[in-house]
Length: 114
Ligand code: AMP
Image (cartoon, helix red, strand yellow):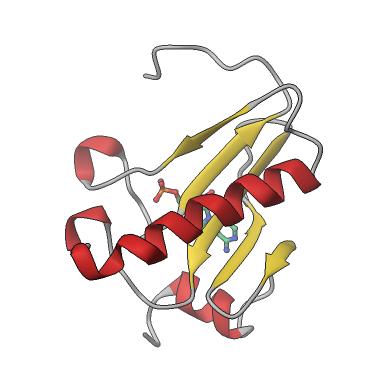
């Protein structure tokens, strides 16, 4: 989608601090990091939000999480741990309408989240 910032990042039209790229996913550092390590993993295919997923997307979402865990390990988070976050919709403060998984780590994270 031409007007989607994450589609444009996936297409290479907007620069990012990439930490992983493959046929289906791109991972890059968050512009406004909330932890010492904070990156996003996105599917190249445009999916606006969790609410748009269907059963046909189960494999995509599974591989999205496996990819995120592998990148987290590559960045040294496997031993100390990390958190996955997917914000969906207004109440969860989703600001970019292209499905993205946040991976946060590198410090002790508070719980419950705000
Ligand atoms: P969310 O609030 O869950 O929709 O998260 C969107 C995230 O995208 C925020 O943490 C932003 O800092 C991040 N973000 C927005 N634009 C960019 C960009 N061009 N490169 C990297 N991260 C971005």
